[in-house]
Picture 1: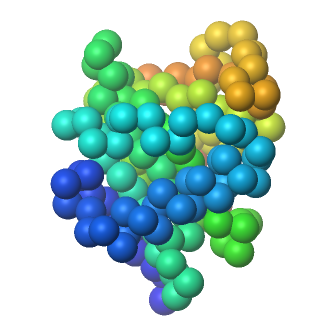
Picture 2: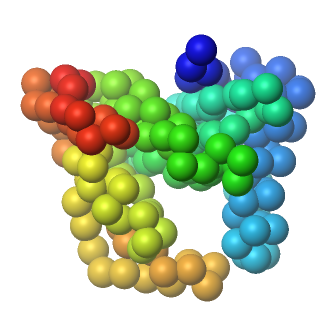
Picture 3: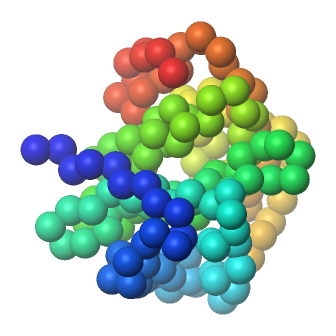
Length: 161
């Protein structure tokens, strides 16, 4: 059975789920990637923030955050997959769910450079020069509303948005 994609606003997250989400983010971004930075950035509880995650028998296996930006865009960030779940398509499933929820809003993200091709599969294009954040090269990317256009699924198959 395929685990469900869960979605919640900050105020709807129960303490054990919130703890598991934050632990995954800190384990991946702070510990594994060796980036000492303020992971708890004050944006998780913004009114427009939406948290998407997939849990397996061991807990939260994959996560991403959607934020409403002042210019009307949605920012996808904090995309993380637990080491035990990498290569299983969970990040792609989360991206497809996020895109489904975008509607006709443009979307932006800052991709770690080695993941640019992954995000291109979902209709994102480079939107500026590479920059270094917390010692890791990133590329700003943007996805315009697709209307009735197709989008690539995590398996490479085309599906309507």
